[in-house]
Length: 299
Image 1 (cartoon, rainbow, N blue to C red):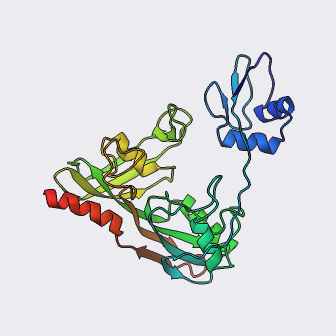
Image 2: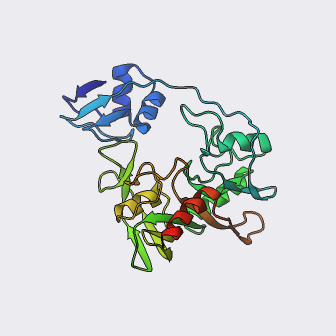
Image 3: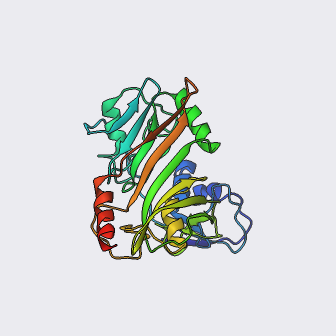
């Protein structure tokens, strides 16, 4: 790691560092997005104006070539037409390639299944309108052309998309319903995690309803007003009821290694071509019901 202290007004950080380090602006931007460059131990945008006394840390960074290639995969396709697909994502499947993970993603399977996928999100996220965590199961919509993608993305942004999740959490929640309104940003103590924080955060709102109570756990239905990274997992941990079997935010011993008990159960949206409302529901996966049955036995 290299560290620099700013001695004079130096303008935008991306321009300053590209000149200082003889890196391209695009590489500096990638490093900023990947938080390989910090100012006063905090991530900043490329447009950040450096101030006298700022301490800039530059961490080692090697660009890795990513690729997206077709890969035969058993996809659970709930619905498909010329404009879109609704996929019931399996446990453990990463949605799209990233640095260090170019294979066995949902995108690899989509490329094998269909040659018609939108490219609005770039070559490594064809068709991907929204995503869910690798160890979260359930429904997501995939766009097969740019017109459908733009429409679905706008509906998602306008909060018209219906997204309902089921989660099994540790502890017994006494309130039948509730809303968690707490901003989420990068955890200042662990850059790989998200947290409820006032530092470099964005608004996040999650609504919940109790479906069933067990001796040591509660089954919830949750709906999102916002779509922050790890939002449900962070919010539930924040109020003291972490998701069962969550390896990152759980604070409890893992029951097994199949991932957290969180399932994107219901997905509803307006069809981009017909303008008709469509809603899909999915069954809880075996990895979820098996763990839930352990809590039922304790009742």
